[in-house]
Image 1 (cartoon, rainbow, N blue to C red):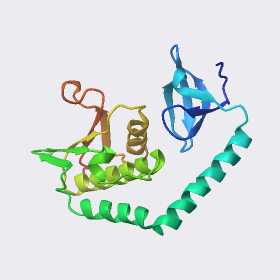
Image 2: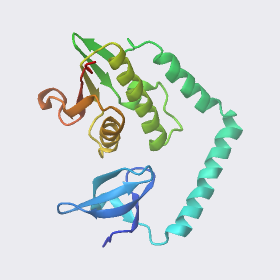
Image 3: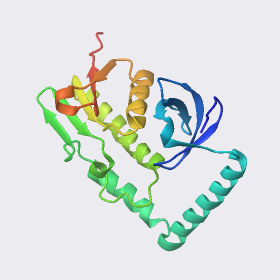
Image 4: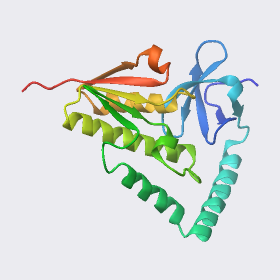
Length: 199
């Protein structure tokens, strides 16, 4: 399969489409996903969409059918229940996936740590929940004057890691970040330093 810049591609191992933006080292393609994030993906994990317009139309039709079925079968209760469970579970900052260790917080953002039931959620919806929790924990750390926060996001394709780092760069001017201790977390965590603002 030969890809060129501007091609529309589909992921082999997850839902969604992206656009080819460039090429990195051998076998890696820089793509922009539907949420506007750019990151590298192995070319072998992508499939070129030959007729994007026709496929998009078919995809939207299928997506509407699935959503109609969900509403018909559950009256929307499944999504409402997931949202309610999330809010209840994280009403308290001492929730089970947040560990406060002296001067830093360790927060696990894996979706199975945030939700008891993730049935019916697509990858974008899962990432939205993870990012909501990330923002909430950053606010708590700032309020409690906790100088270090470690977010465990896993490795995967690096999408959540990129989203976290973009959010930090765009919305948290008093924070710096880098890879967390490799010996403890491998490549699956980001350490954030929150700097006190002097008045």
